[in-house]
Length: 262
Ligand code: GLN
Image 1 (cartoon, rainbow, N blue to C red):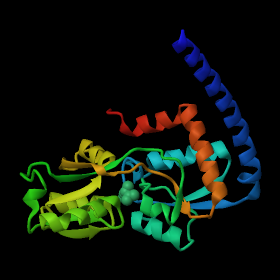
Image 2 (image 1 turned 90 degrees about the horizontal axis):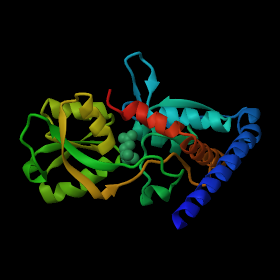
Image 3 (image 1 turned 90 degrees about the vertical axis):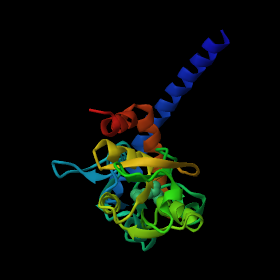
């Protein structure tokens, strides 16, 4: 009986949430978005599948790309998405050349000093991957060797935090695909990457396998970022739109589109 009542309560709350969601999206569209004519510049990564990448038909697609499109449609704002690379996207945000970043960007305490993040929209953690046919099993096998990391990422912070203890060198890349390539060719023995991205790459046959997972220290969800104290209206619209697309099932459809096995 108690359970039934709480379920009814949840149903009622969900309905009222949905109601206020749709009315606020209408308002947001009118005063802050389309009618003001402002076009927000949003920077992103270049190759970070399944979050952003160029597909076989040469379309720039992915979970971030579709989430932003759905949120903008829901809230009625215009934007231009610029694929710059992760480090370059963050630099462009900092220099004021873009208004926001959506790039599988981890919400961390350190970054929260500089940026305001949206609500989290995807869980992630760092892992280490090696060539699938190789015999590297753990950090202990990396002494005196070189590993690959991507500039400015959580993966690179993770690598830096381990390199002293395990005695490896870190070679930096600006693009995830170049980093994987360096491991496949054997120049680097391993690379550090976000687990959902590496798992997707492995499912697409990138030639790597995951050997270690850093869930404890490097579990960080993704958020949409603006500079601290700036573009508050955009951040608000992103959060409102995100809540709406989670509520109406669009969010789940987007994630399923890019992650379910064919
Ligand atoms: N999630 C990681 C970070 O924010 C990597 C993001 C990326 O490479 N696009 O550091």
